[in-house]
Image (cartoon, rainbow, N blue to C red):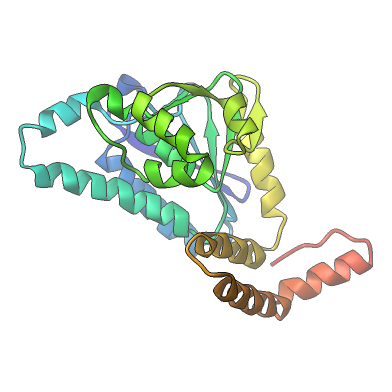
Length: 259
């Protein structure tokens, strides 16, 4: 069975499912390309207001396919570099996608699978799910933005421990650290992620897009620059039709129906 990224819809949410049964949903170039394409199409589709990324058969992703990596050692280094660029294109597509992206994690999220979950805007994880940056255990260093995401999500000492020691960390500990947003019971991460997505789908898409953009810019921004961005986005959103809908609904104690 080949590795593939399955695409389905649940209301206004696009669900992308990592499926590679033989290798515990290990990632690969086909998935990377399919992920970039799916987000590109969803970006211009007004019927899609959020995306959930999950794994098939109770597993999020085992990360890289070690057999493929072993074979790539016999090829020129440029071959593996090109493969990693495919992964990184998908990570960048998730980060710049103007709609919310939620990771629904059941079972293990290892290596690039952990990096992929961290790239999402929010994480819903089953209580028994396990996250591990497995790279150092096979003499490798991280990819998929794992070092970038972890260094911003947790204290440097913990990021160093997770990357250098390759130790597992549970979903409950990650929730305590603020990395995991919601916990679910085993096998229920996707269902709870869809509930969270439905909450977001009811919000004004233009406002959520501005929030995601502002958060992305905040890390490398001065206060003055960020204040200017907030001003510009606020004014733009105030004069959007959805602000009229939202304010009127609030004043009239009604539920808004955003465009």
